[in-house]
Length: 377
Image (tube, rainbow, N blue to C red; front, side, top):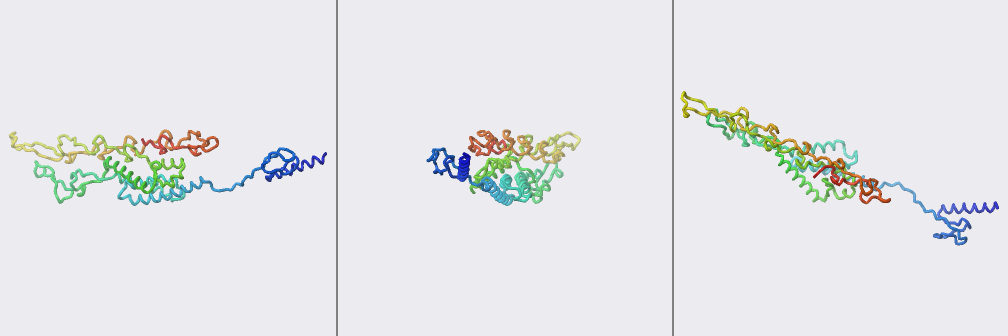
């Protein structure tokens, strides 16, 4: 009896070894079965299921890591091209250079650390601020010569009945004959210039084949590789201008209606001169009296004084954005541009498969700001 149990144990052991190797052997009679048989053809005993071969795991870089590296490489190339174009256009078209600087600033978020020196980011920020300043700076007419650039001679010192007269050939000492002085442009002109620069930038890049990711323009090859997180990252990196001031951070002064000047309120001042009646004889006949004309001491003969509200600039800080020039943050996503996916509730998985809405990323672009992180409307 012991020998029978010993033989049966050996047959079971052999069957187990063969099963581990992928072969099917009957555990009762010890005969090999054919592939696909459920019971032994000889003793009708139920056969064990064959063991499936498990492939050995090979360590390979994931597709996600490859895409991230490719995104960083493409973004670095676009940043270099944008900065180069911005520097070329900065002197003649600062409004267009500003758009290229800002596009590069947004895409710098996708560039891996160490790709560029630390000074590149600072140079992009400095160039952007410099281009915006060039757009807002301009010239204003000289009040001393009324924009003529000629010296204004005060004839009242010679003939009391006469006032100021332009002298040809003698430049105005205030503007040095230019007729204009450095100052801030009118807010409406600066806003129009910024909008024109943005339109030209988009036209140039879209003709070159770029597509929009929010306000950022990228090649289609980069657009296909971007995840939701990467899209929100570059869209929130692009400054969203205030819809009232269009990034100028200023609005026209209501006190002077944007001119920067107000009529002189000195008592007796009429267009910059003071008229006084002097008696030339003992009698009060009008023909014996004459009017003396002299310059107003407050406005110095200009007839106008700088507006006390805007200090003569013609503009004040924008009340919509408090002088920042940027749109307020989105209150729904708090400026991140991302929200948890509603379909998978932030898990990235639906019934064991990747969520079709967020594609397994657990987050989607904020529907309120469309991923831009600011209230653009």
